[in-house]
Image 1 (tube, rainbow, N blue to C red):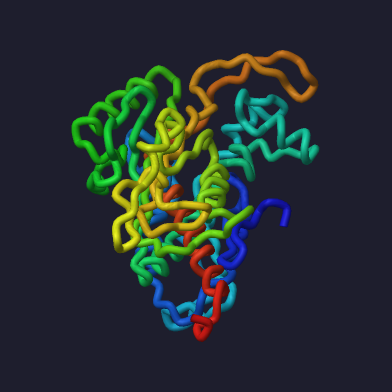
Image 2: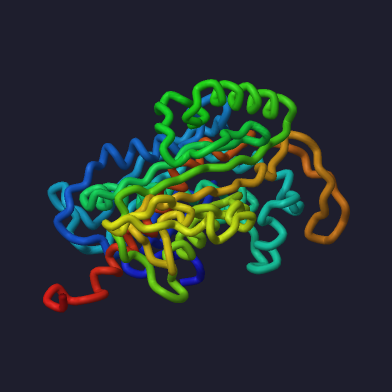
Length: 359
């Protein structure tokens, strides 16, 4: 499959490039006879698309999804779902200046060495625009998960030096009109002002997204190589610009004593604390699954950078094109999508664990 597919039962395969004719995918393993709200899928795409506020790239893409198969009379048929999203605002000439140059911290050098053939138009297949396909699959997965009482949501916890402190597990979600998608109104304003300053200087900044999954039943995940948190980590680390993933207590847990970190049981099987982050032994325990995802600063700067070309000669790479000063606000629906895809894949896989009459 050459790394273009994700999942084992609920499987997403994507295709397309940033400045090609379009992007699309095939989703296999979707159960039949599930009613799907197509407007909700488009709403999720709108949350990810460029040009939605002054603090993101101004590339204008409608990101309208066209379904080619897998539905009949508004319900899934159980057959592969094919979909296409056409590119409408390509400006490939914006990238002519890097045709033979390698942008620092981009995939230009590694793709060229691996394939001996590089699509330099916005990074081609390595562009974050590929994630539009994940949001389509994620929106479908979310709707199926909700029929099982499972909800996945995320928000921005940090942008550069601007960071929310304290316990985030029960903090309310931000309203959709909040362009930075931070749930604290005062911090959101600070983040927006900060990003405007960063953008004006031609620089970029990273950040952190906090995600939680509520209502996940006990028993999802496999005991050895397909541990639930390992697959969540793989899915989230596959998102462009992600540099770190932690769940539950994460790295803070390394500073704690076992007597403080252990999650004591109640009589109903729930735990008094949730340092485990909803996963124990690689299997969900029924508690909320909590995660933090760290994103690096976007590598494209609106300023000159020193680099090399394909001949190994030192060159200057000029900052051109349309880019976000920070990817984190637009990445929120992408994080939700990858978590939803992973959870649904494990939910469907779990149906084969035992027979109904094998109680």
